[in-house]
Image (cartoon, rainbow, N blue to C red; front, side):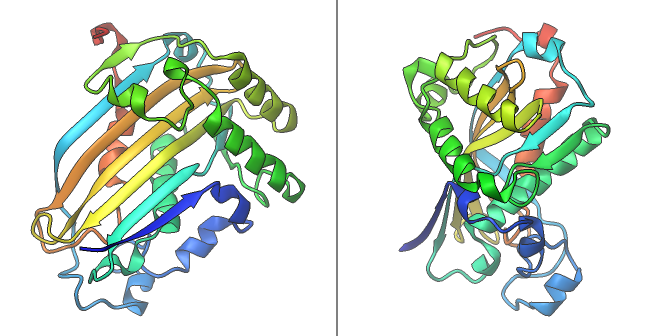
Length: 282
């Protein structure tokens, strides 16, 4: 089966001033069941409308918390929301339910999932989109693109670039409390950002890859891989990092044409609900 591969790198450079509006107009990419977007773009091959049920398998995960950063947590601080730095969306050339699937739709779905989670836990926290035309000025578009590229290529764990997944794959199945030291280059990048934009925290999905497989489960499924990070840029610390990889297979007739980030929400939520006293570094 030939796969259609759509890779999005340094998405900041091409984002419209308010990307949420654009995605909302893109049909059923992000629309909930039964809303106007779905009705205007009917899909005879998408099965019965209803709740999509997924079975998760082949899961790999690595979690890392920084207790020192949590001790300074400010639930009313200014929070910067960064778009995913690198996204790869793969789908078969012939896929009856992949009409809404794209790198842009994945980015929107992930951002919406993150928004819902943070709003429920930190309602006083002001969140700003770190994209040109939103919180970031249009004049800083090129600067932010260069900043994103530098962030991705900066050495971090095991002296490898942040874009390299090897450190987390080698630690698969591990969760630990660790005030991981940041190299000078990374601290300097955060210092540059704070000097221009007074954000306290910055969420950065560094890597996201989703591959649709219509043969999985009852109505198709997908493989999900993500490296999601949260930084205290004012104090130049990593708050936490999560690497998550799994296969999601449908258990019902509703195909995975939307809500791809739904299983990741519970895994991201764990980073805020874990009891540190019960975590043993291993």
